[in-house]
Length: 441
Ligand code: UDX
Picture 1 (cartoon, protein in one colour):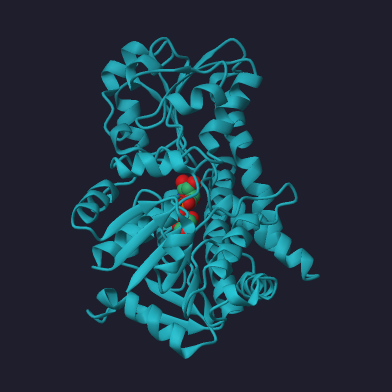
Picture 2 (cartoon, rainbow, N blue to C red):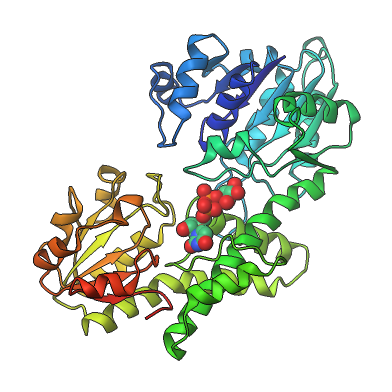
């Protein structure tokens, strides 16, 4: 069974490579010819553990190919996954122009029954919009070029996380399939059969509109959970309680679960910020005031500023001071800086008159332009040298075991501000370094 995956971003590349790993013939398609040329040489544009290996292996054994010929790839496939970008428009709603383009291309190349699957996070009603676009394009085509009008549209949202995307694809908590055709559901289940043969993977089979909302509801719920614990940490700082113990106790409650309860400088990345805003917009357009989610978006936008206030307080003002910043990506194991709170903090510190020296294990060149005025350092020690404080913004593993005595010597003022709570305060203080954490003393 041939598959075409349109769009070679995070979701598309991981989906294509993993289906090829299952032994299916996959064509990953992108209109960006330069990107395809790089991929053909085995160059993966993103930093994702395990992905390069799967891509190489499956290219070699002929299960995975890359192409910029969307027409040919559609004609040769039974199933077409749409994994193109749905960027935020200025009003927060999702821009569907790339999805529309793909739907038109599918209509032009419909040479037999096909299943069209949305993998990108798309607003409720997008599946129906794709169906309408295909039918409209078909209706405008000369009759001799139309060989069939048989197709099904399916919503099959992806829940993968950056940094563990391959692992998440191969071990999903559930697979959601939204469709109104039994045939399409059966084809999708068949594609995923290597995952459920072990009996562990659960399916949620539903209609398209419900499936589309499941993806937003999941991300919005997790973003809310992170924001909630961030607010509890901010409160702990003010009333002297310990957020770690609170999170532990919350997590012990079976109704809550211990995951996504680590306080930090705010959620970032390519999904949570975009999807929470898009869901607010979806609600607004449906005439519903989604109060909780609006507050989550607002509180999260405030969080990096709160972190800068924390830094100002600990350093007794940052104007003219030097701040060493560890981590620029929005989370560890990725070079992605989209909506990264670390970047927001660096900018805000500059605005407040501080000199910023930053180090990130994966991010360097691309952010240089974005972070004008910030010195990008080659390692932790050069970021710390002569600084009035060292701030941990992203919890990379290599920041968990820093040489504290050496840092004490390098820092102008021995002060560690740990915005991810990866250190035990006592351990840092024993090394003669003042410690400021998140909601703990
Ligand atoms: C997320 C969803 O988890 C995934 O299912 C969806 O497909 C895409 O969006 P991702 O953006 O890769 O994945 O990152 P994730 O690991 O979920 O973290 C999101 C943000 O929340 C990060 O900025 C992270 O630092 C923050 N976070 C997460 C916390 O601050 N504390 C936590 O306890 C968990």
